[in-house]
Amino acid sequence: MATKTIPAAFGKVLRELRERAGLSQEELADAADLDRTYVSMLERARRQPTLETLFRIAAALGVAPATLVARTAAELQ
Image (cartoon, rainbow, N blue to C red; front, side, top):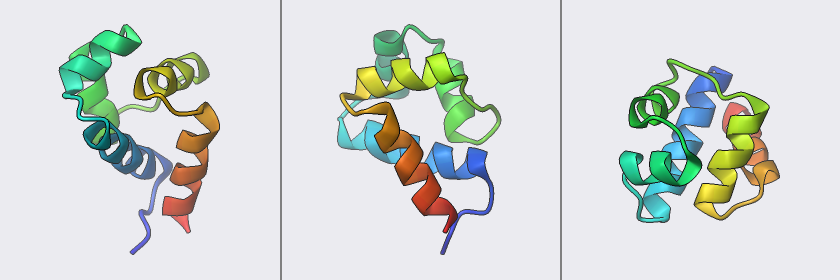
């Protein structure tokens, strides 16, 4: 079933990629120079990332920023 909102879709993708990378929220936050609570809020669709944050998260996960965007778009379909 498709996720209904962009923040929810992004949060789902972020959680999946973070877990696949074997990272905790705290480890991802440290690698992306973010607060751990912010990563939690992104995953729970309470916040949306800026473009700069999207790039930092992608680098920390070892994926292209376009991958995050494309997978989020796919969740919305």
